[in-house]
Image 1: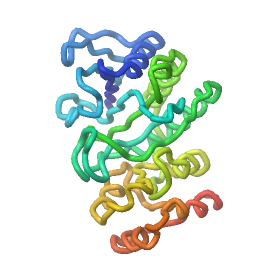
Image 2 (image 1 turned 180 degrees about the horizontal axis):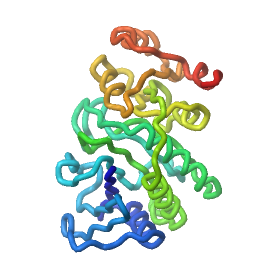
Image 3 (image 1 turned 45 degrees about the horizontal axis):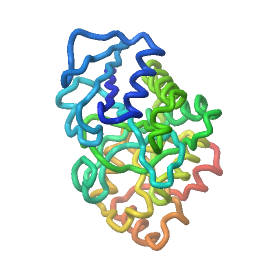
Length: 274
């Protein structure tokens, strides 16, 4: 497996994480460059610095030879929550921040779970909220891709301890074989998805794509099929945050039955041994 870590020159959190990667680990500077910036390598991991914002790196998998892409970035929040987070990219609706309208990327669910577990272990004393986010924004890639982020304002983006934790998480994630978990798609709940957090921490399932309550209005059969099929390994189950579906309960169950797939409420996943 070949891995690409992508950071942006325009992203202070990404540059913070890049510095931690280079300073903490034995990344070697290569003679080759990408977009005028040096490429660094550690075993089968390459570190690239791009000129544009990460969310606009459309089809970068056509330019870089890798099996999985990890975007190390900032996370912005109006509330200014101190956070460490990860998620799959993709757009349930209009592509307002990179990507393609109504198109989801391939979510590497097992890698997302392992990253989330490592962040929880390494970051427990940092005082940041550690959370899964719903699927949102670009870029669009055909290869599996994930974002791992520091939030939510400049003070946190340049926090060295946070940069070190994300750097250590990425290297630990990519240097060891990742267990292949059974995978699920989550429907309902918030942008910071507490249902996904519980599944990641308290079950043997890994979460790929997450459609939050505020996107259920646009959810359709095509998007639901994408969420299941564009997860690796393919999602075998849809998990419902029943309360978090709000007024869309009937619509969601109808869509699931239409595509003839299995679903469970989150309490069923967490209450029974797997």
